[in-house]
Structures are given as C-alpha cells and as structure tokens.
Length: 450
Image (tube, rainbow, N blue to C red; front, side, top):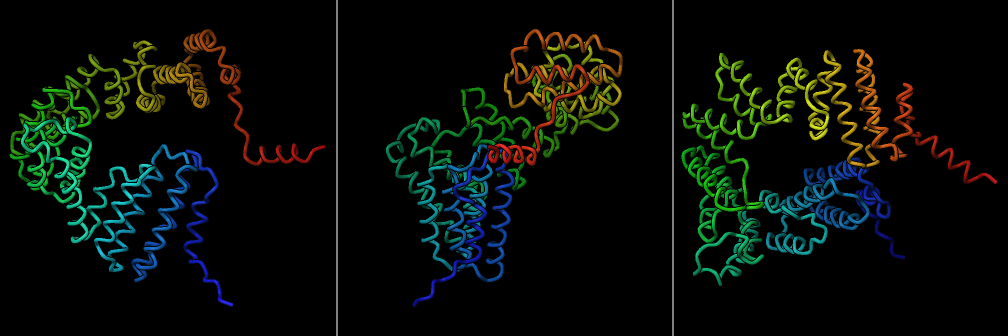
C-alpha cells in the first residue's frame, strides 16, 4: 500500500492561522493579521536558508488562503489587504531566488491582478516593480506600455486631453506606468507620457519630487510652479496636489531664497492656519525671532481658526493662553472640533486649568451624544465623568449643572445612555462591562439548568 505523503508542517500552520470558517471582527483583525505575519516570517526564513522552492509553494497557498478568508473578516481597516501585498511580493522574491522563469512569474502576477475580486492588488504595482529583477521588470513594464499604446492609438493625432477625458483603458494603464516610473526614478519616461496627455498638478508634484531627489532643485521648482498654476484652471479631483505649496517653500530654501520661502509660508499660514503650517513657518524663523513670530502665528490662528489655535497651543504647551480662550468660547464651537484635537488639549489643561479642561470634556461628551452612535456612548460617559470631577475640584458645579440640564433635556430618550449618566450624578460611574469569565459562566448555568 502506497504511503500517504505527509503535509508540510508549515502548511498546517497556515491552515491554523487562517482558521477558515471562523469570522474575524474588526476588533480582532489586528491580532489576527499579526499572527499571520508570524507564520509568514517562518516561510521567509526558508528563502534565507536555501529552501526558496519550498517557500514558493507555501506562499502561493498562503495568499490563496487569504482570498478564501476575504469574506470571513471585517477588513475595513485594510490589514488583510496590506498583508496580502507583503506576501505577494515575498513570493516574487522567492521565485527569483529559486531560479523560476521571469516570464512565468510576470504572467502569474498579471493574471492575479486581472482577477482581483477583493481589491487586494489595488495600488500594488509600485511594490511589484520594486521587487522584480531586471528581466521581470522589463516584461512587467512592457505589458502596461503596450496596453497603453494600443488603447491610445485612436487619439495620437488629437490635442492632448486631461487623463480622465480618455477611456478607462488609457487612463488606467497611464496611471500604472506613472507609478512604475516613480519607483525607478525614470523622469524622461514620465515626461514623455505627460506629452501625450495633459500634465496634472499631481504629475507636476511627482516630477518635481523626482528632480528634487536628484538635487536638481531649479527644475523641481519649475514643475512646482507649473502645478500651482494648473491648480487654478479647473477642478482636478484626485489629480490635485495639496503638497505643492509646501514643496515650493522647501525648494526656495534649498536654492538660497529663504526669505521667499518664509513669505510663502506666512502667506499660506494666514490663509489656512494649521499645526503643519505652523511647523513649516517656524523652519524659516531665526532663533532670536522665534518668540515674536510664535505670538503672531497664535494671534492669526485665534482670529481665523479655533481648531488650529487649540492644536498649536497643545503642541507648544501654551496652556495659560489656551485656557483663557477656552473659557470664553461657546460650547457649540468646541463641539464642532474633532475629538482627537480637543482630547489632547483637555489632558494638557487638566493639570493646572481644570475649568477649561472640564469644558472641553463636556463638549466632547455632547458631540458624541449628538452623533447618536450608541457604540461610543461609553466614551461619552467617561468624558462627562471627567468633566464632573474637574468642575467639582474648582467649585464650578453650576457649570456641571448646566451640562446635566442639557443632557436631560435633549437626550433623555437615549435609553442605552441615560441610565448610566444618572449614575455619574451620584458619583458611582457606569457599570463595568461583564468579563468574559462572568459571561460564559452565566451561559453555562443557563444552558445546563432545568
């Protein structure tokens, strides 16, 4: 009797790691993919230890298994998709190390990309271009060049148009080629493609970046200026580029025009105050003038953007100035600001400026309630609890009473929230969620009772 061939132990590990048939929730997806990464490392080790051929087969089964898992996981965070890209590129490198034919590898890659029903291969061309060897890359690039040229033939005698004014076969292949040219720092091919279709602001930024990497700063600046001019001519959608102004400032400084770079940074900051704009502005300020321009930037942000003012004060630890502003600003305005900005400010203020911190915590809680998403009500309760403690600490309980009145008035019908909120008023706080052990023991009793 013929003996049955034993399964590769690493294949069994892949099977266990993927756990087909078991649904993975969003909250579980990070840990799930981390375990997949541990398994991948063991296959990667085979390639390093001279077993590339064995690794090739395991990689293929692994990323095929990822596709089988695609409908059994909430991958809205993109973790499994990103892992697939890493796995796919590792497989390419293993095939190359095993001496597999380049044309067979590229054909397999292209077929997989064409049949990508779950979007795992979206935007993967750059990664593939980076790991392919010279022979494979030439074939990969030629495929998309041929696809583009064949689709573009009917338009060769026409005046160049915006890329999305062409059919999908033209713009899709053109966009892939551009990504490949960026990876290989191929400026000339990128320029030649832009002569056939109108260059967009995004193209200008990409070309400027390539020139900048080669330290051709004057050429880079010329393309940035062109991109800024193009931005004003039409709505570009995803071919727009919001990084051109910042790149212009950096290039001006590289070319010895630091004063022009500063003027540009200050002009941009006044139009669109932000913490990033603040950082950019301060790059061009001499140390002896830092305090003066820091105060000017705060004043400008205070006049035009509460959000930017809070961010800049939090970054620079200007808690006294921020506290004064928060105390006088309306609750409704605080509620409009993203919680990742206000929460950071509240933590910083809570040490010495309890009233301002409490006001922010109350605003965050109210913002969550107004959104009406029940899964975040526990966070709202935590923020209200912090607000209550801080108001009591500085004897401003009338302000806490105003929050209580508003919550009861506007949100008393949110039954999954209001009961726990009333517990906060007594100082008890909301009940802690049941532990896993408590839940399963209750289930055991229920399932085994008469």
